Image 1 (cartoon, rainbow, N blue to C red):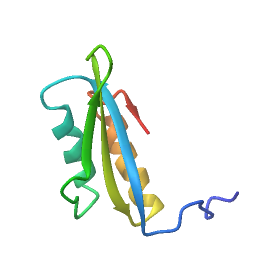
Image 2: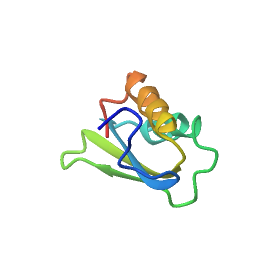
Image 3: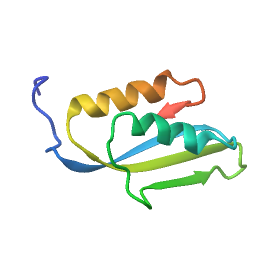
Length: 88
């Protein structure tokens, strides 16, 4: 597949997931990073789940992705933040 080809057709619904150590503000950190690149995050679009032991939290944000560049920018912002251990 070439760089210009994509398996996604934009715009589309897309789940951004980030995982990090559980903290009071981890959800807020993830949402703020995603919000820099998405004009509208709908109510109910954010969910979080602690790990079995409660040490880690995963946060999922459902967005309407408009381009590959937008997704790349979101993932770059997430992976650049020290609180985010993994972004999927």
